[in-house]
Length: 163
Image (cartoon, rainbow, N blue to C red):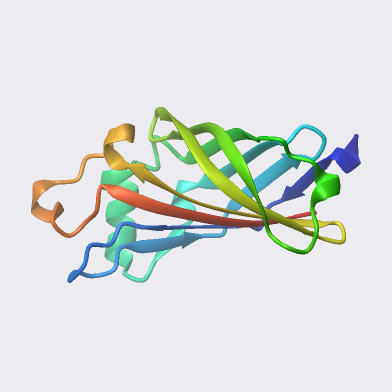
C-alpha cells in the first residue's frame, strides 16, 4: 500500500493577481504538501496561508489580515481526481491529465476543472498545475481604494515532486 502513495512536503504554490501598470501582486509558498494515490489518481494538496511570501512586507500583512484572514482560515485545501490516470503510462515527457476537484479557501468551496501535467523520473513523480480562481467565489473582498490595482482573477500555479 505504501508504494501506492506518492508524497511531498516541499512543493511550491505561486499566485499572481497583478494588474498592468501597477505594482506586482504575487507570492510564493513552499509550506505546501501534496499526496497522490498512484493506483486511483486521487490527489490532494494543502497550503498554509501564512506561508505565502511577497516581495513587499506590507502586501503580505494585508493579504493575511484583510484578504485571506489567515488566523480564521489558516489553510487552502484541494482534493481531486486525475481522470484516466495510469502511473505505468508516465514517462520523462510531460503528460496532460484532466483534473477535477474541490478547492477549499477562505471558508468557501469551489469546483475546479483544469489540467495537470505529470511526468516520472525513477520513483519521483512531478505534478504541475495552473488555473485561475475568482476572488468573488471565495468571498474575498477587495476594498475599492485598491480595486484597480488588484485583479479579481487570481492565477495559481503549483509544482510538486512526489516521492
